[in-house]
Length: 269
Image (cartoon, rainbow, N blue to C red; front, side, top):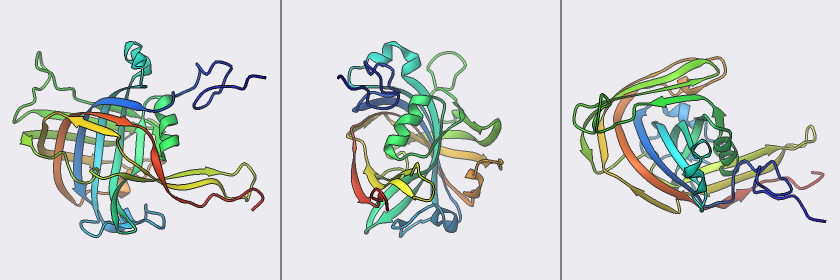
């Protein structure tokens, strides 16, 4: 008897209905990054053991908006854009594991179901949201990439706006930030179907780009506001001190991660 097919749910006779294809996953995107410092205690409370805060600048946060086109190895999704395009916004911090520095996504919102599915696989804590950002363009009223250009970004979840930013570019930059510049340390968690049995999946994983390229980065300053909401906690990472803002176009390939620790319970434990 032929088994069902597909990399992810739903698994079917042909596998065509699977939410996501098998990696590698390829991305082209416009990233708007706002870095700032918050209370280090607010970062620490989001780091489960064995992760620790970064030894230097432990309160640094990056809030990143991204406008993506993504596809599988075949690239077929690029000619069916509803399967390729999505937007996201996420908060990244830095942490330490066995003396090595990592980045970690602590909050993230996306606007497509396939992006949520990929996040579950990678350990990103993705939720649905409404994400928008200014798209620079060399013609018409859109801002050009030049000193003085102003770019806006908004994030809403469950009908509440929870973040907004206005970035003013100053000039080209040799970097696009330091907070999200390391491999990611994420947890893959799944509760047992049996009550009281704990986690059926409990892994700490390392995830990084298999390849990366990018255009000229631009830097500037940001006006960033975070707002309270009944079902969101982004505002706990309150802005204490701005660092910088960045804009950059990038290309990324993701092709799997590495298991750091597994604490998955055995059957019947």
